[in-house]
Image (cartoon, rainbow, N blue to C red; front, side, top):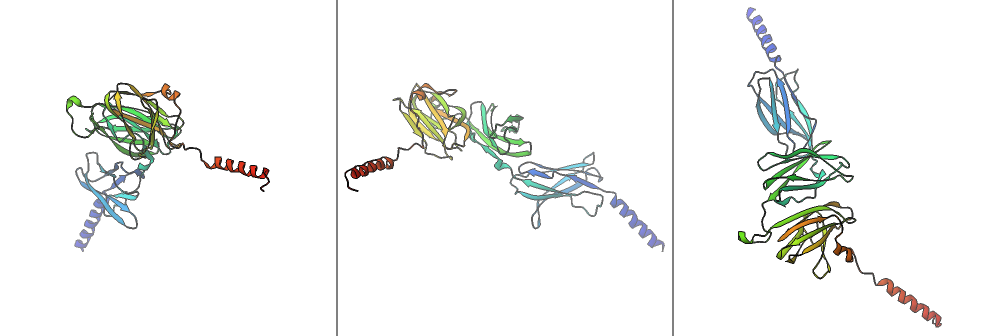
Length: 361
């Protein structure tokens, strides 16, 4: 009888010890894909105790995605961080597997959302090094507000921000970030609704755009400038050429039209690449200034355009219409000659009238 009593007391004692341990975790209800999922927890387990934290994807069944082993800290807290880059949109849960801890909160549901499509960058993904990064684009739903931008450099140091940049009535923004060296820069965007996403902008060391190696003595410089452009308000640039072949091209991602005035005073039109590739033309540099006009094909576009020139001394965005364009008649890629149908109908009508007068009808 004493043995039974002692056994029951022992079981009661062990149960009391087991119920004394608690684990509580906390995680956000929703998170943008690409943002770290941070799970914070507190526990009564001893310092240094290993704890499993598991991330599951929940659809019709539950699938384990990632598992982290973390350790209880001196303040009886623990933290697990999951990288959500590349995960699908949907419902997930984070959980600390336990055995019947009734006073504990060991599971949280997290909904991952993908907002990366809300970003439309119009600045080039690859730019030539000139001491700054040009960042321009639009954030869906952020009209007349702002977007927070942060730039991480090639050495994982913060080179800009986080800083808010204003957006206009179309949700577009533009800014320049000073840099000291080329490389890959991670640009992240956050608005009032949370993290939106990130983009990589590659800054290349200054080099010639022409193919094949060239000696340092004949290395050609590349200069650039940018300005806002639309069909109603085109951008104008003045390009001071060097001597020899000059190559001029736009940024991509928007279907741009270039008009330039050649040395004979004739306006030439360049538009044959579409949205995926930059528009480009070449001319023989004579050390003179060439003026170009750039605007989008679509009337709905109002965005930043970047102009790059090889073997040019400078590229400057003009604040007013240059005189050569004032004197020249404007042209447009959508201009078409008048249809010959209407003159023909007029001539036919005159013929019928003449025949009626002669009594033929």
